[in-house]
Picture 1 (spheres, rainbow, N blue to C red):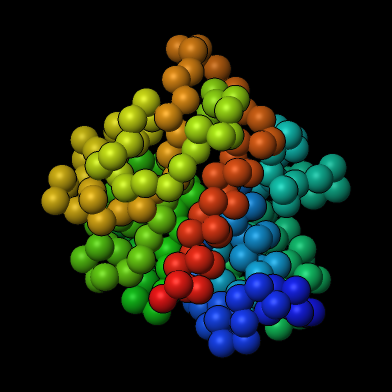
Picture 2 (cartoon, rainbow, N blue to C red):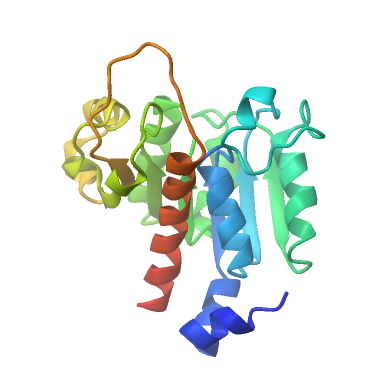
Length: 223
């Protein structure tokens, strides 16, 4: 994969560190898919993805891996085909499971430099946060993007400093307060209409996913 343009921005040393990263992404839908896409295009060569779901026609408006030809296929299989055709050096490990307390030990989370939580489950998010903090693994978690229309309201903060985000509020109620300030999140301050349908668009989830990659790459570059 030709990474000359990225190398001109960050230098060879940083680029080599980026390439050697080992990253776990849990959930490769509207947010995690864009994180995966941008990490691969930044040259990260060691990525594990976890997602139990299949591509659905309702994904077409916002999920980068979805198209009319792969509806019904496992998302992890679709991702493998897409991203190994972008970077032939990519070591992409896939797990089509729902991550929970009964199987989290099977992934050996200590091997990862960063954990990206882009899943929808409050229980899985809280589990990942607790495990990563206890093992000193860097984690960044996506908060809610449904019903949001203003991508400029998204920012990277810590869980304890989130506002106007119902998903973050649920997590603050179950994640111990003493670790909330240690957990990086992408959250929106947009106040949304209280509607029952979880409407979505292409650009807010995409921006959230790209901000996660922004955090990881700049964290490596500045360390």
